[in-house]
Length: 153
Image (cartoon, rainbow, N blue to C red; front, side, top):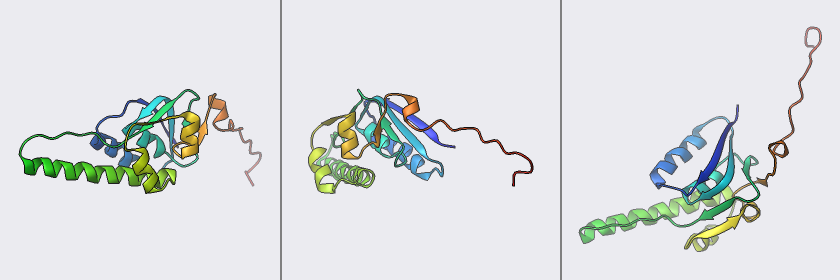
């Protein structure tokens, strides 16, 4: 049975988001994703990570991608270590978005350099979602009951 993930989030910690992302990819069932308000930052990555063909947004949803945020203080060597880690995280997130959107890494590097906002239609064109939906019925046809007579042959 499919799992549905309804997203209305400004984002959050990358490590927490990656735990959710890895779980979504690990599951054997399909994961439907729905943006019902906004999906920004890490939440946009999770929106895009839904099962292809089952990633949706409502018409007035707002989606935003950008590079990871971070900060460091302390000794110069510690700051250097943190800087390298945030650059590694930036590359990883761009690779994940490229995989799910089919956008080239070069475009993602440019687009995520600053906050990059999209409407639901823009997110569809970008490959973050598959459909903009107005009603739940428009997502997929309502299954019809099957009646089997006799011994089922």
